[in-house]
Length: 419
Ligand SMILES: Cc1ncc(COP(=O)(O)O)c(C=O)c1O
Image (cartoon, rainbow, N blue to C red):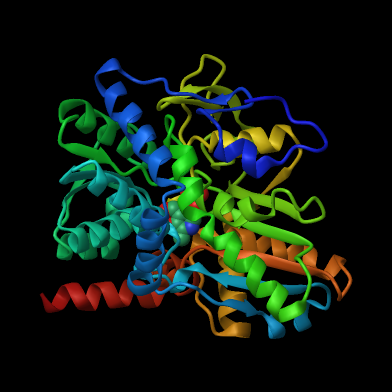
């Protein structure tokens, strides 16, 4: 990919990339799965401008997932904060509760084109696994989901739903038992069953072509936001805010605005408990460049290049790497990054519930927390859009243990006593 200049059209550069975004990206993989990645790239390149493929995808977005999702003005919250107007893109109203279904539908259609019948996936919060299990049930595919044991336990409701949808969920006991251990387990599975399997990778990370194709399948989010905000206000937003785990919801939101220079794009990482190693998951804020899981980007690693443990109150942000596309956009100063702490995030969930009647996923609440911080400092005619990447019911046990620990403990005791 060429170097960016003032006049670069980022959308074209990204969509026409051969796998590198500036110095980031690439395909650092074992030779045994190179044919899979090359065949997937070729299928994607053939489909991305194919009208019948796009029509099938749009139909699935509309009739299976429930798109378009609304753009909700947060009148009460904005009034209380006394500054900018805040809008929430309601990706949590998608089928299965998050934006993840957008790239699951896209990838399953690509797998179908390739004649694959077996889908492998990894999941952190469970949202990507849940969405994968749903699309596999609908398109008649076998589904195997890897999940770090820590996530398997803290996101138990999603495990139950994945199993109900017919998926086999395998807890991964290695490493920190979170998302990157699940990614490694999924790659090992692909290496063992390359012919019949498609690895439905769940974010804009991993080797080429995953960052590109998940950005492509998520860009519907920003396209809808642009149309909706122009209809509602007749102007573009001043700032777009999205949480960043691997980067799929952020890129989905940002992509459509990349060439609108006046729209500020801000990624909010997981600030966790502190900026100390092992207590957060803020890769761009605190990470270093390196190669891991097939791609070159920013990772949380020590001076010897060993991946460090991560922490976030939200399982979906608890990952050590970040999209090479976001790394590139950060270096080119097109996307800025900040982070939100666990405590501020939990408080943002409560504040939104009380003022607007919406329960937001902990992941997305990182972005909302930053909106709550900056809105009072901005004039009333400024517009902030937050990507509400998911709904928060899945986080019941974590959120309740923070706000009503005693009643959760009593509930668990009574419930277990009934068994
Ligand atoms: C609701 C929700 N938002 C955000 C994320 C983070 O992923 P990404 O950065 O790829 O959007 C997750 C991951 O599971 C999620 O479930």
